[in-house]
Length: 420
Ligand SMILES: *Cc1c(COP(=O)(O)O)cnc(C)c1O
Image (tube, rainbow, N blue to C red; front, side):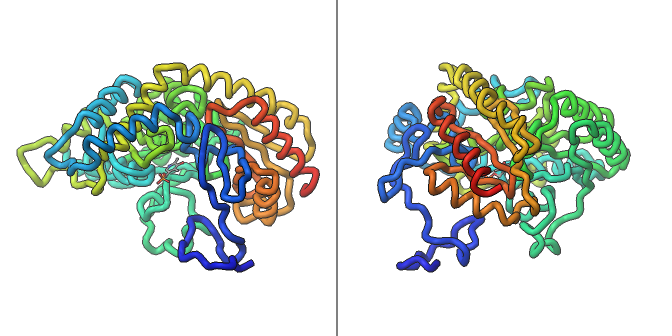
């Protein structure tokens, strides 16, 4: 299946030898993508979980246009600008109480790298020898070497294994087995060398849309606090309404010591990320000694245009986005419910605006043979759904209509008819 004219582009998470030409998209509007050959595709996964309010939201587009004409890039060491100051001030109002400082970067992975460096820098600067990181089984925190180290090990990173640093891992709190997870965290944290525990609150995304309850999240935080271990919440995917609240930690009444937000931070329009931290982590780096500064920067740290997009996003959250989230969550529940009784599926689940279900297949897992077949099936029905192995999930932009969702779930049912 060689494309007639070979493109020099190497695409992410794509096996080119098994893939035809890439779908060429020329325009996005709301929940829809339009292809070069004039098809309208429903974006059921918010273009890899980033597009919250819809493609090309006019309020965000206008903010980008006007900022681009004013100041579109500035070194962020020794300089600041109004869009960044506004994002930081607004974020601190919305984030859990107790987070006091905002560090900007440009992707979810980088925000996690920053979180890990903040944690290690904190212990280093206060003179306590804590360096080990505790992680949760099936986690995903990014594709850089540091974030792969704290994420699930497997086919994704087997080639890079020699570069990955050693971590302690606790089991995923599967329903009915939460106590085993809590006990494992308590045991791991009894090691005085543990610096931090990093976790995706309420939903492990790339690990298969695995969901666990808020009370377990609250307990995880309590155990870390008792052991003096820093608690890092990776809300890169769970933030921005995905779990039903603006941030997932709200549901457990948890204030993380460090929190990472990205994906929906600009409504999915431009790359931007932030790492928020408690004052004492910042204070541990605050000194007349220059060797104690936080040694981290990206060229585009707090890019003004991306910050303007983030401010426009934050304005949308003050103008009714919460109601849209509640309405999408309710529609999702209505449409996923019938699948709970469908014997072709198992683990039918929902948290907030995200639903997921596993198509029963002989070979499960990310490389399951069913995966590419599902992908091709949905593509033919003009649905952008990208199953994780045999796990199909729906994570739409919040402008999705009931008619769109009906088409999405009809497609999922039809896929089971055709392939199960
Ligand atoms: C997507 C994701 C990341 C990585 O974000 P990028 O912007 O792709 O680097 C990190 N953590 C979680 C939980 C994610 O879902």
